[in-house]
Length: 148
Image (tube, rainbow, N blue to C red):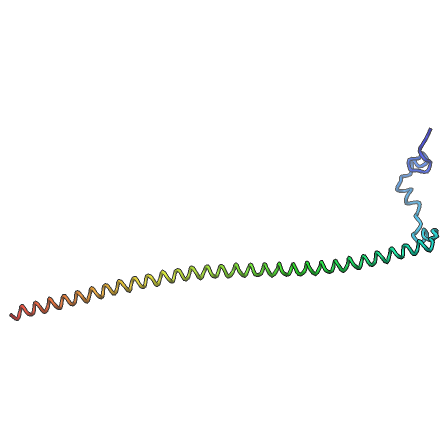
């Protein structure tokens, strides 16, 4: 018993013809032709019109929600960009502050060296005055001894 239908590509009648050739040779009717063959009732038409209006309303709601999400995303993107700019600015200011602290430290060292040098020079001057004073005293004593 042969269970293979006679109008399929597997059928013995179709042995020399490929399936794609057989599909291309039979054109499908257009949608308008198919709809013309249907005889929809008024209730069916009203049902689908109602469905279409519901879908359009839902589509409008979804588009509104999408617009709100778009605005929220744009706002968030702007906030993130501003945050990144502020972080970069903070990093630059921290680097400038660090550089100024190094510079201030160097200046303080320089001032301390100057104070140290001033103190050393004062000591030297004071020592020089003491030496001159001693020299004058000894000179006066020598002159006094010569006069006697």
